[in-house]
Image (cartoon, rainbow over all chains, first blue to last red; front, side, top):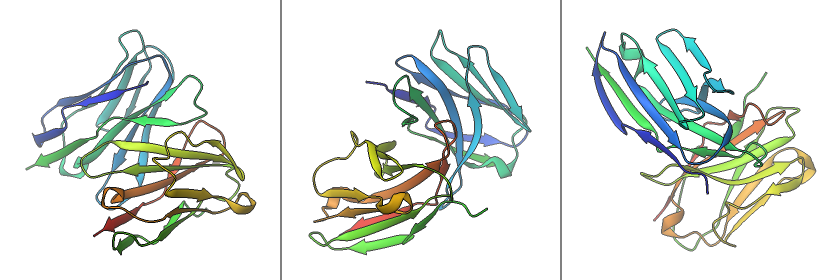
Length: 112
Length: 112
């Protein structure tokens, strides 16, 4: 059974600091997603990572994938308050037709 | 283009009652997924429709849950009778292929 673990689950950061959220998964996966959720809103897709060594960046967020280690990271550079949200990683297994297996989510709070 | 919509946004019912949640996918999306997040836990897959057919219903917790997608358009998820442990946020997502899922805002179900 595919399992996905994120850490940390809670992250309180100061503005302008850097930090990384980690996402480990237990079995071979076709692709990995990072989502952002603001309170009461839908999940917004941030990144889709398809292959080993994939790196994608959007603004202050950068995601990478190491399929050999079954590890993805979401790096936050010079955090700002607007990045406060819950971040989820999710993985698609080999034969699951798009079925997503999610991590627990990381609640990020950025303080002035 | 309208996004995925869900109705109601919030439902409060008593244990033993019946509730029906509705999801309207993005027009033209054959794939429709239901997920659920119980308080404090990760988002879990419930089932996947391709058009009106159930592709995968391995995540449905028990036979109190019934999902339908008549005509391959909108979908309903009925819980009958509802139990306390059914409380949580129910998300619907749709996709044109298996690559990118678009999520609705969710329905928060509270069973008292």
